[in-house]
Image 1 (cartoon, rainbow, N blue to C red):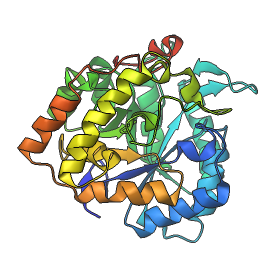
Image 2: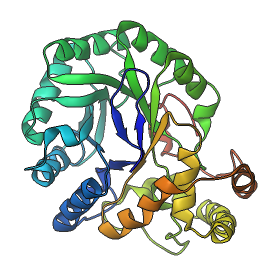
Image 3: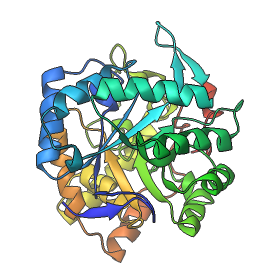
Length: 331
């Protein structure tokens, strides 16, 4: 597994990261034993970056990772943790809490659940409109000084917020959705990151499975699968979006790879400062994704991919309308 560095100040990590959200019910029921086996397979394959959040099934994901990582050398992997999203017992979202006292509180819980002494990259999940980003980053910096955190990260914020945060403490990376279907970061955010020497960890590289090559128009999201709320999976949009996937499949076939591998490799090809996160919850899906790290796309490949899925081609927002206001950039 090749490595990349998260910005000019962040840690060296594997060229692909593992996103653990789907292991805790975000896309419906997940098999705990298979999820743990998938984490083990990822580590054995050389993946060193594992991304989670304290609100993924309200601590379930962190506890699962603690079990999966037990006995592993702590220096052999990097934990990226998001915090601050408020949720109720009915799984409803209630906004972001990024107050300095909340930062310390959330961190204490995460350290305990993960069974670790420190977090490698700690980041607010969304911008808290009631708390200046400078205060939040300042609180994380205090935790760095105390030895509980190694690096500051951000998630789903705009270029101006990145600048303000970076002025308080160097930011290792911004985690934000980036895929063939979601390219809004290219306008202002990505140039700003590169100007400041900040990395990008890209989530949603397969559009939550929409461009994995395994989704179909007649497939219905099961209980607990939040894709049932996604505009891109809605009737009228999903058919159009899957037509894009079929165009991409033709390019993949000519290149001798799967659609998923091509989509992941496209994100990785956008710069050595970008690390795609693969949201696999099974060893089968992980095994399909791993070859993308070695897939080198030529200029001709990239041109054919652009023809198949031009920027802005997707139909539907990447989140339900009520959630779009929490994002730093659009689609």
